[in-house]
Image 1 (cartoon, helix red, strand yellow):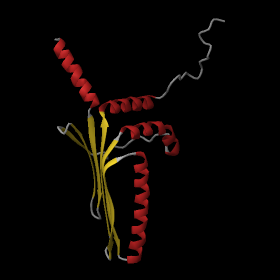
Image 2 (cartoon, one colour):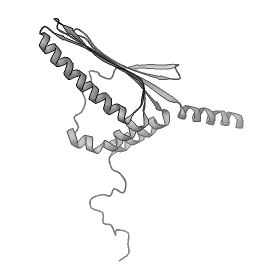
Image 3 (cartoon, one colour):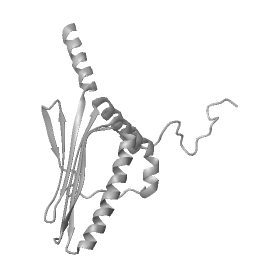
Length: 187
């Protein structure tokens, strides 16, 4: 019995310290849009997720910058804990007008370079591949974005706890509005 308990504790410890791999892939072509997200654990358990469904979502009262400001610490926590394994971002763009193609080509290169440099100042990427290709005398837009992210199971559990706290509302030392600070003191 005690060996079974030790084995269960050991397996739980290994599971909590193991990495989960997320593969995010976005492909946009002129006639097709494809978004896939897959999750794998130990390369044995593989799940494919379609994040966009036909379900209608409730509109939250908090929106825009206020929502971002409230969740800034939460987003920073997530970004600190993830490991970027691979980032592939390829774009093919073309217009019938060569001048317009050249201007858009240069603009996309500059935007991509700024975004990638911002990511590289905060994170280290093991494999990085980004490219922009100009296609002259043809109207075409193809985007391939593939990103592999790893995160430990412990951090996912902590993130879910933080999400539940945010949804439930309240925080540290929260009191009701009609409660006094000296409510339990004998006067």
